Length: 303
Ligand SMILES: Nc1ncnc2c1ncn2[C@@H]1O[C@H](COP(=O)(O)OP(=O)(O)O)[C@@H](O)[C@H]1O
Ligand SMILES: [Mg+2]
Image (cartoon, rainbow, N blue to C red; front, side, top):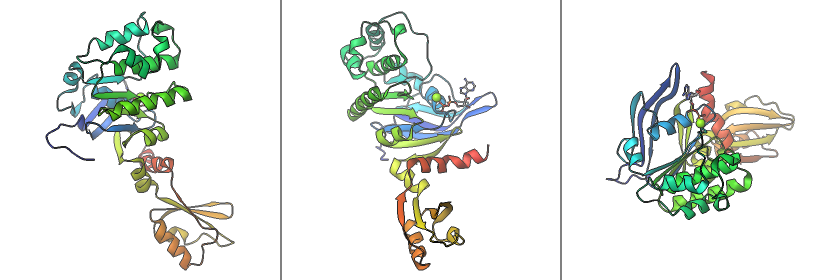
């Protein structure tokens, strides 16, 4: 990540803590997002994604630590019209049409985008005259995307934006989100889908039990946490000693093959060669799923 001197980060959390009674929803979050970045906040249900977003939007105050947007308190940035958000929780929707709702929101921002453009980007032009309380879950979600875009905000915050969307709507959604980001806007979206984080974000922050446990591109996370998978045909040998080979972190037997998870596949393969044990060799990169499981497993063990 490059840091431009003089320009405050779009988002900055310093040791932010948020508790709900006995639940430590955020347990000391440090994060920075530079203007123009698209960042995914990736985590399981209950990891702390929505709480992070609530603090970020000034909807909740941290118990400890600080949160700033563009170098000022969130409330100020929100009031100045620099932030657009699509929240997860369902709120009571007023008896107005889609166009009226989007126009109302746009009118509260200093430099909104044209209503027709917001409707088009969210793929709801044909729903403009419909009442917002008479829409399907997926349609409602797209209306909320239009609402988030309406003010043409520098920072767009989306909490699990694709949860109720079908495949086609998802595709359209990500296409427009990327286009918006390409115009120099900053985007933070949360998801529990690894593929979405990997495909649509410049950088992934993995959150688990209220802590950021990893920060990097999908590629970097795969490399640092997942490593590689080396598999060989055991050809009647036993697996004794394989666990001790350089780089190897675990050994699993599947049928007549051994699957070695390794941090250093070159060293592992050379050691296997010295043992004369490389029949049917296959080397594969661990998936982002493997990396995610490895990153969050440590925390689970302490629960
Ligand atoms: N208003 C609340 N009252 C009590 N506990 C809450 C509240 N909001 C969130 N939590 C708890 O805080 C933790 C993080 O929740 P949340 O941020 O909603 O996770 P995520 O969005 O990643 O699914 C969970 O254990 C959740 O049960
Ligand atoms: Mg949530």
